[in-house]
Image 1 (tube, rainbow, N blue to C red):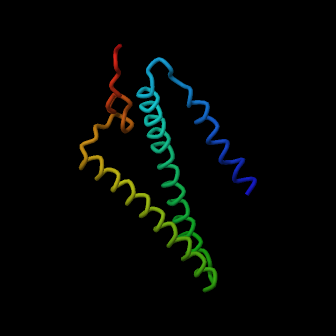
Image 2: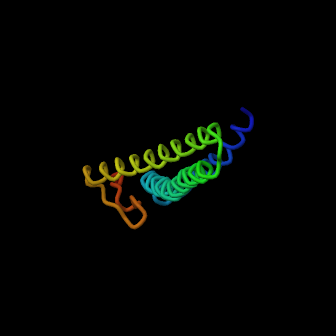
Image 3: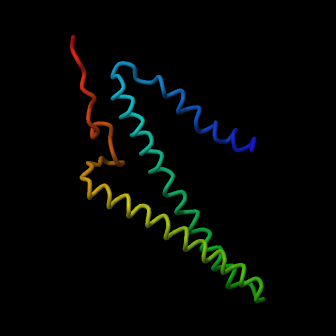
Length: 126
């Protein structure tokens, strides 16, 4: 449990440091920047997980072909199945996200939702 908290804090501490962030643009600028950072992080992580799923699948296929006994082939089938499940799950999530973006008409930039695509919070001038 202690290792989990240390690992989680490594990812959360930069987010806490970002909390003060852009003080000139107010809350709207911070929300836009946070959404942009989240979008960039997701866009960077998804190909990594897809690559892991493909490697697991290929490892299972190679192990299945090389292993002569039935017990080894049974274990290799597990890798193949979980590799296919991982690939399918990632593609389904990406498809649903794309469907939601197209259905809701969310404008996207080159890397996803950009900070300028979000509405601004109205300001009151005294």
